[in-house]
Image (cartoon, rainbow, N blue to C red; front, side):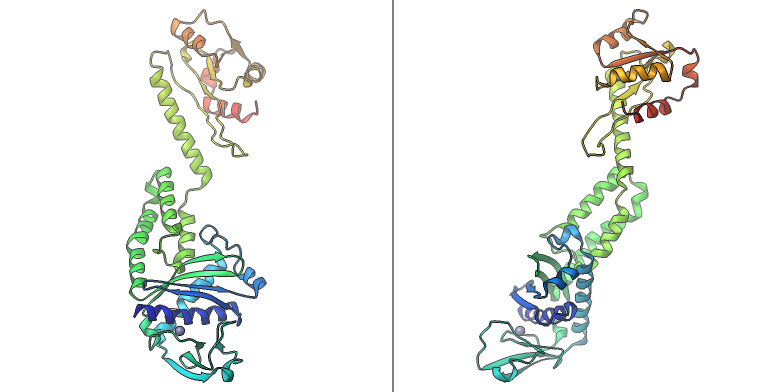
Length: 371
Ligand SMILES: [Zn+2]
């Protein structure tokens, strides 16, 4: 029964594609009928037109072609409408010569037909196709139809994967129960989730959504879900900022805990950049100020090339004195300076510099300058 359901549905797909693409010469390349699904492969000889309607279809899932989605949605609704209309199927016999040039009867080009042919008619004239397969007796017996996957085979060839009957119903169920629930949950809870968790969950949903092998996602829902998904997905800049803040916090904690014996008063600011404009992974130096009771400002510099520039800058712009002699400081501080060659230490010329200075602002400014 399912074989005849699936086979009959190929007649509908054939007819509707011809209408939608406005291509009477659309070629049905193949139809593979399985018990649980069927494949309908076609090519439209009007390649220009087909390119216009189906832009960039090489990878359907990555591109989400809008026109295709529209077309698929239409196919979906039209076929189910026809199923519900319960069109009757009839078979008529003809001599091939009497119908061979009838434009309303679909036939496979280059096929050699016998003298006597069978024409399968859906609702007498809605669709007429030469065929000797097994069909249901009315469209309602197809029960349900779902277009679950579309592959592009070259410029003008498309391969559609479809399901009918209880398989379509099952897929619909799976979709409603699992994916849809998970999706709505995420929508409801998005404001209560940390950005990175929201991002992870969005990625997981995207994987399900894009899974080529999965037949669980009704195609006609795709554009709707894709738009909602775009809404859910955190803004990249915000996410990057969030993640770099998190890393900074971690660094800060690690730095403090691994240097517990050092006279660290506070770590004023750290700056760490993930990707520069060329998308190169790059770390930027960060600033610490240690022991503000001793009135010094300390920069941690990963990049030695920045050294001279930043010294010059601090001297002229902030009237800071660069310190390289730590004899006056306690042993721990001295050890810190000698242990790492990456520290730059400044002492302000002005006595109340630390009281007046907002370090976050200062360091943000400093590192927005291209040293
Ligand atoms: Zn048939």
